[in-house]
Length: 421
Image (cartoon, rainbow, N blue to C red; front, top):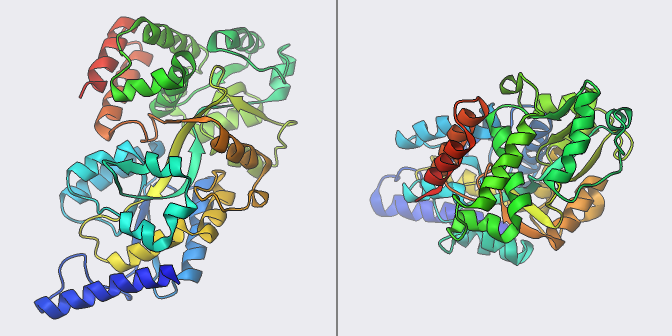
């Protein structure tokens, strides 16, 4: 009922605006005959299945609106973000678009391109449904600008037990640090398989953030983004050296690979390990892989007790042509029905604390437990830790370094410059 009242309020506000002005201000009009344009980068695989499941719930909950997809594939959202930037600057926003919750949104907020949706949180009852810590992480200067569809964890290792056993590595072994992991990686490489499947630059940045978490610990890792940890310090130097060593285990054609390719290498037995967010679990499951038998997983060595947090979320752009439809979409995104359908298909976990864990896979249940227990830290690669501008600069520095265009000292200096406000 609260959701219906909230959507009706959006429509009523638009009617009042028409009555007062004689015209409809851009983005304010209810548009029941206009599809809701939703831009995402979920174009294939488990991501597309998750989106399709969410659209199915939207159609049931809001038959007065129709969905219009605008998926832009490539690079964990980098292509979509480029296209969005062009559209937003031109004053032609979609009705809503996918973004990572947290600091990634600051560029849009500073440019005045997003509405504060805090009032919708009250109308839809989301402050009660989402954990308090999550509400805190979603805020930017005390306001909320997106509704998360699900939670992912960035700091996970995925492994092929058969490849490990053939290399003489205990498939059930765990490792207390990045350095303690190196002998197992050496053994897999000596067996003739790729030791660590790493792909294009954004996957390398994902690996980098997990090494920083492991070697610095949760508090000092967060300090990289709050200014309390020195990017030029010796601890960061040591972490970057570990990152450099891990990259030496990566395949030579890594820049031609994306995360589905590197995950497939583990599934096919061409690689022993990969580091990837837990959206990878859906790729294993869709191939009929059985956890503990055909594949295994564990937090990146040194990050036990740390949950690298990111949230797929949706926004309400200023000037949305179908604002009422966008609000209806956000209602579905935050609903228990929408979150259950979406996350079951995508491999993530609900942001809502009232979703039933029994509806999810064994991995997802373990992630739900970890999310409620571990220290939650923001992901760099996936928008929770810093702005798009800082991420782009770190990504460029990483691409130069891993291609052999700079030494470690130059790389560290470039990262320090990138992270300096």
